Image 1 (cartoon, rainbow, N blue to C red):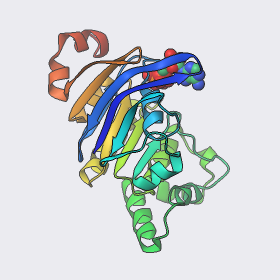
Image 2: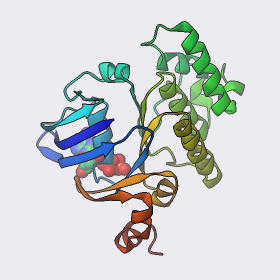
Image 3: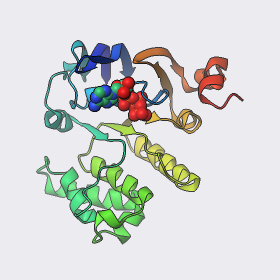
Image 4: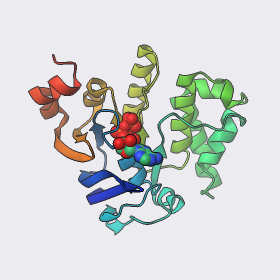
Length: 235
Ligand code: ATP
């Protein structure tokens, strides 16, 4: 479904990604694991068109999308939930969700997706008229995910959805990611919480200082001593 072929990404003169390649098959949950600053967010931004690779190529469903505008990439079916949630604080929950569908014209489909999002996140239904800035951190995360789903993506990019959330809520968010996946959406998940991420992922890539250093099935990485020591708390 998605192939990233040897991309280099820079911030000015600073190179953040060095020849990164990865592949995502339809229906999978793939997770990116790596320390702070390893380049995980940069990779998601390159896929969603927020950053342009200097070298290499990103191919989605057989067509190169590198260099395309972010909006065009959303239209092709890739939605990005950025780190730190970024909901529009002065708009209601419902208005934020509407924005997620702004490129669509299929009114019936949009209505169905509102119902689906409210079913996945009953909290958002309860609070649909509330200003988003007044939601808790966990509710804002749900809203950011709901808004991305309103674009009816085929591929959902999630950047640290568990960040700053209480453990119980982290479990809820991960359960919902699995539900979204089972309903047919492919997921690329960036997580600091490698244990949780590997527990729901099919495959994983490990990124260190802008390079993919290891990849495999979630089972393989869970069993790797190297991964245990570096990312799973050493046990
Ligand atoms: P985190 O979990 O902290 O977001 P990450 O793995 O997602 O970590 P990135 O945010 O992709 O890492 O950052 C990769 C590298 O690029 C880091 O060295 C970071 O300092 C650098 N970087 C990120 N954003 C910028 C920017 N806007 N300008 C300059 N350098 C940046």
